Amino acid sequence: MPLDEIHSTDKNPSKGRSPVGRVKRVIIIVFDSLGIGALPDAVDYGDVGSHTLDNISKAVGGLNIPTLSKLGLGCIDGVGEVAEVSESIAAYGRMREASVGKDTTTGHWEIAGLILKDGYRRFPDGLPEEILREFTERTGYGYLFGGAASGTEIIERLGAEHIESGKPILYTSADSVFQIAAHEDVMPVAELYRISTLCREFLNGYNVARVIARPFVGKVGSFERTSQRRDFSIEPPVKLLPEYIKDAGLRSVAIGKISDIFCGRGFSEVLKTTSNDEVMEAVLESLNSTKGGLIFANLVDFDMLYGHRNDARGYARALEQADLELGRVIESLSYGDMLILTADHGCDPTTSSTDHSREYVPLLVYGRGLKGNVNLGTRESFRDLGTTVAEYLEVDTLKVGESFLSLII
Image 1 (tube, helix red, strand yellow):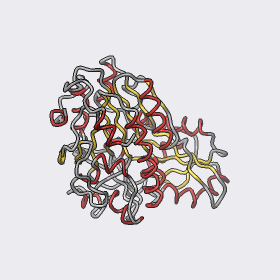
Image 2 (cartoon, helix red, strand yellow):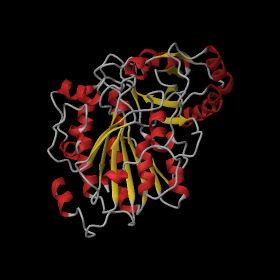
Image 3 (cartoon, one colour):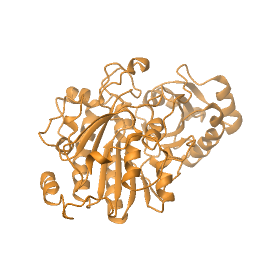
Image 4 (tube, one colour):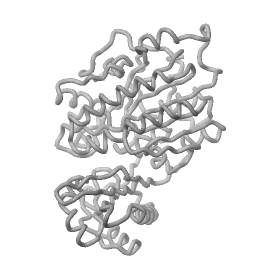
């Protein structure tokens, strides 16, 4: 059934009553890295001119994303490359990141209620000698490199030496990350996870946001990173939205890397996936099995496979495929469901940088019985999203953020 028909035919099955008071469920899907324009402070991050969505569209001659268009993506302030519809079926807006930084952890935690004012420690000049020395002492391994680099570039450059020596490749980026790359035939994935856990323990003292295990396969000249990547995040310093939802006795499902980002805190079910397609299938599966509460998913391929690799065409194809899958998700929604689409930061593949970009992120909110064609404007923090979710699910959380629920009920 076309989206317009879904919205019009099942818009009000309870004779004018709002979804409040019914069994309610929120589905948050994070389009990882889908920024929609540089923030005012982007100059401080070297990201002036970044616009992940528009610049990809320009690079490929336009995007075929009719579902996102009907939801109102092209109606958002600052979006110029997506068709603007006369009446969107969703509420739409954009969100400004209030936290310091532009990484995965910071963005997701702000969505869930926490603004980080100081940010986590970064290493633009490479990992300090004291950290590299402690890595060797804790794990018993030597290492290669230790500087700042693109992950795909560094395994091509040092992969052969790694295979010969058995030493893992250590590197960082513009984000607060400590990354460990190892070939699966040289270091089994379980061993890579083990030493990543050891690193997570001592890097808490250095205020590093994430340790990332980066297994790869292949031969010299054709190495490929695998879907066995795993993030080991620093513990959230406060209780965040998923924990409040779980503690209220509601279901809370994490899909993709969401559980890793929150250190597993607050989720009654965790569904691991290896691709965007698997994430969308897991969302559909959860819609069939979860009767209320939160379904929280992350589409990591945009960032991991295309944004960081400056692959605008790959990013465009992935967006178009996700748009198709999104149509299936919308068809599976029940009355009382609130679907929220957003992002955690940008990662513009058309710039010379291979790092995240400091950008606004989209906000699309859809549900049968919720108002469409509402401009939510520019929200001053990602946490407005989490505050709205908490109010909708009638869950007490951190008293932060400004709910926009009254605008869409």
